[in-house]
Amino acid sequence: MSMKAKDKASLTIRVIEWANEHESFKLSELFEALTINTSTEMNYVDNILAAKTVDPNPNNILGVSDPNYRGASGIINRQKSKYSLLPTAWFSYVDLQEVQIARENAEFAKANAIEANRKSMIAIYLSAAAMIISSVIGVIQIYIAL
Image (tube, rainbow, N blue to C red; front, side, top):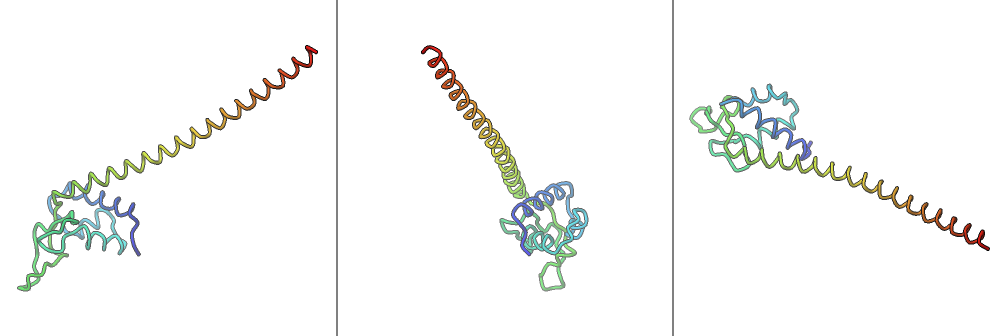
């Protein structure tokens, strides 16, 4: 099952905020602290947010700070390795915050547009009623004058 973009953004923000408070941690500690218990969320953190090697890719926000290798193979034991927040995570954090603020502003603008539309319809109805009343009064005045 795939995560929605909004859920990914929310999880990413939670991870960055929690990781910022901890110098280094195991992924299991992160999962427990943030109650990440669905396989979809775990896979997202494990496969996208956390680096798989000592050299993180640009999409990672968590880097391996204390690697634990499996024997002489050079493969990192990800469950025993410690991670820390990468400096580039703050760019992701700011981007995600901007997206959230833009969404909130869009909702606010939409609500204001609906209210403005309602008020303009009321103004149109009042103008039409005033025009009808004015016409009726004009006809009555003409009829009386005859």
